[in-house]
Image (cartoon, rainbow, N blue to C red; front, side, top):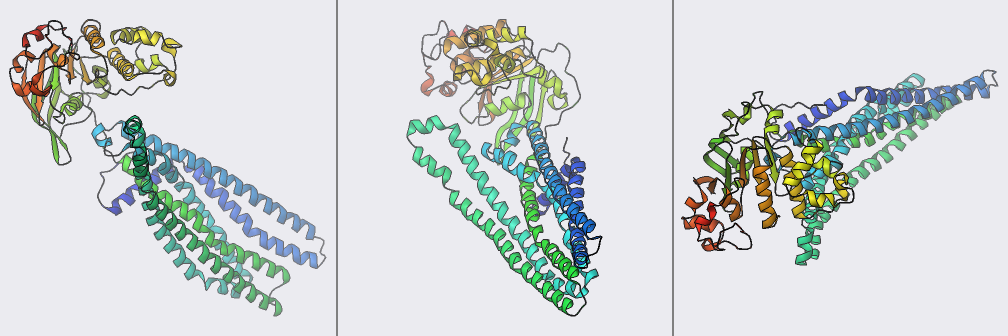
Length: 606
């Protein structure tokens, strides 16, 4: 199912309307089953309405020793059985609708997140996302069935009230005297419950976000000996969560207690009026039995509070899920790239804003096709942001990015993802096996290409040593940081197009392995343009050109030898510009960074 969206407004009211529209679309998608919930619940209500009248008639016939008493009693038993069966069917269908609606919401939210740029998704923390996609989606998924149950739940009390009018208007009048109080009670419950549930879900999401952060840094926490402090940080909002939880159940309990007092009082009043009618000869014994049963059914209007509470919680949770649906998608064009294009990359006046900051400021850059460009700069200079816009993981807020003369925003999605590849510092692998993880991409790579890419990335040796080689289940493959990076590189190599972007993708490799990967990239992987986010001096030294970023701007573009004469450029790699001999093993280098001539040795790769 595809969820289409209008432009989101601001403020509480637009959020509520948008979330309600989302639930309406989900309910329509499950219209058949939701209708089944309504029909079964309505039929069960009809059976429950018929039972008192039939039971009262049977009682009068039994007292009169009429011959039809047995058949009437059998009819009452059949109606009771039908009510039980129909109620069970309604519960089963409601559970099915809830599960399917939850799955639909999750698929829609995940699809929207997957089609958005990483910078937009980053507005939500991993823990917050997990909460919205799990607990909040589950709560929201119950809303369509709850709405149907509310509509059906109102039928029996309404019908019972009508039956009281038909049997004895005085009993009906006694009951309706308390309905205004009941209406006020339900209104107050819906309003208060919505506020408390919203605050509870917000605190719950905050705890999940803190826990996710702690789990991702578990090794650092253990190494620093800060487990107690971290535990306190994660659990600190528990007091607030407990307070909101108690407040939420206090609202629910208060509503139940008030209705628990009000409803028996109304039933007692109805029975008192009915008893007077029996004494006056206005009612028979069977009529009094029917009146008592209908009074109990009419009092069931208070039972609407339970599905009403589920609907309130579902609508509140739907607003949190709807926020994910509001993440803007990254639109694609329909243009094709020139056939056999060399992969020339050009940025014209590119601006990228991150909140109030500008990550990139008027960047103009041209990387000729087939060349390797190393992007260097201090932390926060905008290197990874440049990598994002260069392959259109995100759109710039200003300016244009072109590949072989075609604006990336105009290129069709399938072709863009086929011709632009990425490898990251922390690759995320998907697939049942190691082979599938490497093969996964815009087009599934063949077994031959998978193995060739693994060899080029230096991964083939350790993969073949796994228990089942390339067929080893991914979750059973113990991978170090360097091995994980090599599998990420293998996946990128297996799908290499005219532009390959390596965002610090060799940071966990030792120098010797990095050099082997460099040579393989130059000789065994499809030729094309390489954009390398470089932190190592050796990567910059082996590149055809270096793009020096400083504060979001291109400070200089040139060869490593040319830029090396600038002491501030040397300072990017370390104080005073001295290279770490253990990090840079380029042949001919003396171990100090004062010998720019040694950088002349290149592999034509990184």
